[in-house]
Image (tube, rainbow, N blue to C red; front, side):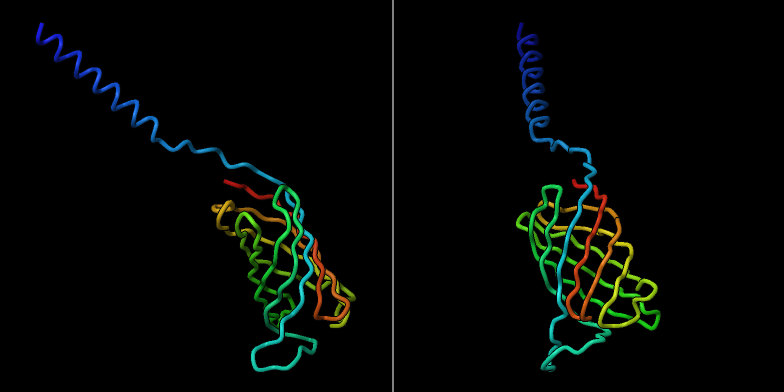
Length: 165
């Protein structure tokens, strides 16, 4: 009888331990693919030590607004860009939203007939490389289409396919 009670006690202890371990396991949700469209409007910032910005600007920092669909909402865009001899714009970008941040990089190519630095249309590819907060682990890619009337202020439409989660 004592053996039966000891075996039963061990089985109960094992069941409780297994149940507690199962309760503490993190449930991993599969990544959710989302289509996002963001409209951004940025301006080139005055570089340290300068008193103004005069186009054409070969490198610098841009700040502005970002309005995104897909439940992302409104936020701020910051990018660091440079324009090498190829004429393409290369940039690292971060969007800051209430729930977190999304970062990536893009390359813009000026369109034919847009080589006047005061007015230009550009298209390119955008790659989402990561995020923070609610967007930790986000990855994806898409297209970017931009227009500037003065070489300082730029409006873009970003169309992305990203995996959240």
